[in-house]
Structure formats: C-alpha cells, structure tokens
Length: 353
Ligand SMILES: Nc1ncnc2c1ncn2[C@@H]1O[C@H](COP(=O)(O)OP(=O)(O)OP(=O)(O)O)[C@@H](O)[C@H]1O
Image (cartoon, rainbow, N blue to C red; front, side, top):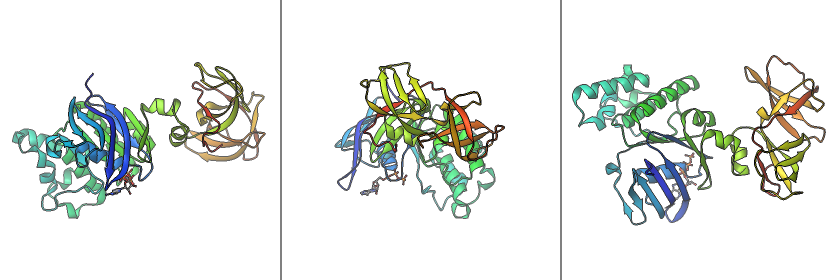
C-alpha cells in the first residue's frame, strides 16, 4: 500500500534539542489530516519537516512512496510539490493579490490560470481584492490570499498552519467547508494544524493529538472521541469526566452510576480500580429513572443545555439535556447512562479524578 504521505519514526531536533519524536502517520491521496495539541507541542516543526525546511534526525518522510527526508538526506523544498501556508502568511509585498495567487501558475495556460485564480478568489471571498497589494489587507484577508496561493498549483501535499486563525467564526465555518470540497475535488492530500477541535472534526479525515513532541493517537474523529487510547486524549478531545470504578468481570465495571458494560474485553484484572470516561452524551435525563443527580450548573447551548450534575458522593458529571427540559439549579433530576463505548483507564494514570 503506497500512501500519499507517510511518516515513519520521524524525529526532529532544533539546535540539538529534540522537538518531535518517533512520529508515525499516514494519509491516503486526497485525505485531510489535522494536528491538534497545545501550544509548543511541535505541530509547526512537524509541518516544516514534511515541507523539507527542517531535517529529520531519525526515520523517514515519504511522498507517494518516495523517500524525501531521512537522516543525512533531504529533497529540497521546491522539488517536493508541497504547498504551505505559514502562520505569518509570507505574501510577496511587491506583488498584487492576483500576482501572489498566480505565483505558482507560471507553467499553466493563461485561460486556465485565470479560471483557477477567479475560482479560488471567489471561494475565499477575496475577488474584490485582486488588484490590491498585501499591506492594504487585513490579517484575515492576507491569510486567505496565502491559502489561495498555496492551493493554486494543486500541490501534491498541502500544509496549513492554523489556516483560519484570523477569520471570524462565521466566515471560518463557510470557508473551511468550501476549502474541504475543493481539496477533495482536486485530490490534494492535506495536513492542517488547528487549535479548534470542532474545526478539526469538520475538516479532517484523520486527526492526530500531539503532546510534548509525541503523537499520542492518529485516527478518525470518531475513534478519538469514542475510543481514545490514553487518558490524555480522552480528556483533550471533547468533554467528559472520569468516574472511579471497580472491574467486576472482563467486560463490566461497577460505578456510582451502576454497572456499565463493554462489548469487548476491557483488559483489566477483576477487582482493579479504574477511571471510567463519562461523556455528556452518555448521561440521559430521564424523569422515570431511580438514579438522580443534583443540578449544579447549566449552560445554554441552543438546542441543548449542558448540565453539570453532582452525584450523591459529590462526584461531578456532565449531561446534555434538550433545552425544552427546564430544571433549576439545586433540583434533583433523574438520570440514566446509555453508553455505546465503555472507555476505561487504570486508576493510577493521572486523569483528574
Ligand atoms: N530554533 C529553535 N531552537 C530550539 N527550540 C525551538 C526552536 N524553534 C522552536 N523551538 C521550540 O520547539 C517547540 C515546538 O515549537 P512549534 O512551533 O513546533 O510548536 P507548535 O505546536 O506549532 O506551537 P503553536 O501552537 O504555539 O504554534 C517549542 O517549545 C519551541 O520553543
């Protein structure tokens, strides 16, 4: 199987300091990947290594089955057919918006060049700005020009570092959706860096969670949310809390919310103390339920409220409740747990319980 982009055991050091270590990831042609992680965890460094700006100290980067980076060997950036949008946009100040976008299209027929520039400018809402120079543009406009310039030559691999950071929420969602469509149409394999999980969920086929230079998990949004492999990923992605539990057999855990069952072996010894991940959508409000919890807080989210509830022990859980159910703070409300994926970690792991 040849991937459009493959990293095997990639490590990168800057000024002799290891920054990212032992990274494995793969993307099929036309797939979109997203790196999520706190500031300073090495996302930009990893993008720069894929683009060829940084050398690797171990492992290899392959594009369409060809090795482009390994220790002591690096295909130059301009030979990789990689497009990259940096956080500082790096537009050419002496060129107009149109000339910036056209920069990588010198070998394309004039009519096709015009068509592509206009299509990208329309999509990115910068059609009115084609004759302007970059210094006249707002940060968000410059960012969109940089995206158009990187997408224009249909690179083999597109790398986007926080591509929507300067856009307001509404524009961001529309543009992200349209960019995804064009990337899919053109079959451009993409990795983007984002701080925004919802954006990652909406844009990406595969998502990687990074922490301190390590890639903890590389999988679909669904798997990250429902089948996190570490307590860190469980905590970082989505909302939820950990409740203490005791393993009672290979597939069941006893908790304050009752006995919860898994459809597969939990891999923990009977009697082991564990932390059980409880997502807000696992906790259903049900007036007929015997089990109750006290409403501590509620936050309006449009169609739903996010309730923070206290169990008898004082442990807190979250529950998403349709907003036509109105319960005041301090009330006891009926709850039941409906869980499709039971996620359990050993208790000694730092989970914030
Ligand atoms: N030239 C350098 N020499 C040594 N360390 C560096 C150098 N450049 C960056 N670093 C360090 O490498 C680490 C990773 O930086 P990087 O920019 O890749 O993180 P990031 O995850 O992209 O962060 P952000 O989300 O804030 O952009 C940081 O701790 C940073 O201080």
